[in-house]
Image 1: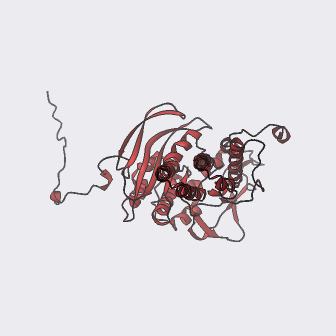
Image 2 (image 1 turned 120 degrees about the horizontal axis):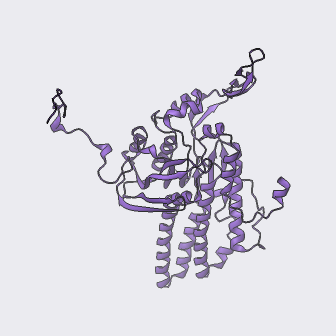
Image 3 (image 1 turned 90 degrees about the horizontal axis):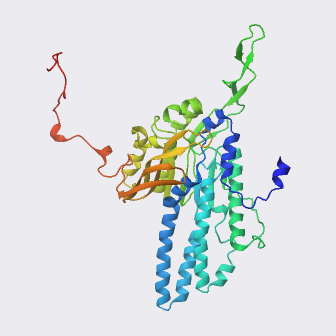
Length: 429
């Protein structure tokens, strides 16, 4: 099968399919444990836009306007230098997906950013800046701009490959099939880290094992099914757990694992559960995805990240998960929700199950955001109809008065009422 596959022409393969292929390869038990879901391309595009491309394109629009003004003033050299400076910043932009799976979000982000880079270089050529464009080797957007963290070693390896496939496809599409990239064509970069995104811990010597809670065998005397003691799995010991550090990035985007708060201990084990909550103040009942949300919001507030955007469970609006959002919206160095879809359809490609998700995009400071509601989802995933409103988005992903911040009225202090109650068994005629 490998030989047959190698005989095909793979130049136009869609890299996003590798996520689906890997998901099929995971057995149901492993898939559930990892919370593995691979986002449809249309949903990736929907989140990449407000998270990464809208702020980059807003900057680019400003640069183009300023360059046009300089040209009108007869300052062509200054205009070229202005555009070159923007390209230099763009070429150094880092994007992180801290639960990257097989790299779909990073691959799409790279494709959109390369399109923007193409527009920048086209303008430089129009301005007669051919020398700068000719000397771009090593000074352009490559897979090195895209960082990932992934706990599954197979997915991590595929993600790195997907980035290179996407990059080479773009190169040949723009430059022609006869123009090869500069040597070495594939660089041994390690931008996808195979590790846990939330905690780190020290090695604990020889691992402890237990029955895998699944494999059975026939008892030699009774003939009944009994646990097979030879089917063992390792039980990790989390010595000196501490919060994992994420690489510094300008934008964070992704689709962290879908595990409900009440299921985290059962899915990931008692040891991991205790280690995780020794390193965080996220409520234990919050969905697992909120640990990623909390770390990304902290990166926006404290580490210079411009924006982050995540696909999450739609239960993000429930009380325990909502507390995580409110903590960052109410902080002195606060953030704001720039984009939110609180209730969005999702069809699991493996079993066709209908799931409801939410999308949120966060930026520093206090600002109005774009609130989308799904008006017609009959054409999901590619052709959905939305309604949009603009305003301050609160922690429950609603516009208008922030009902999550209401407090008791002082005028009602000391007063009470039993409310409306029925007494007796009299029946009105």
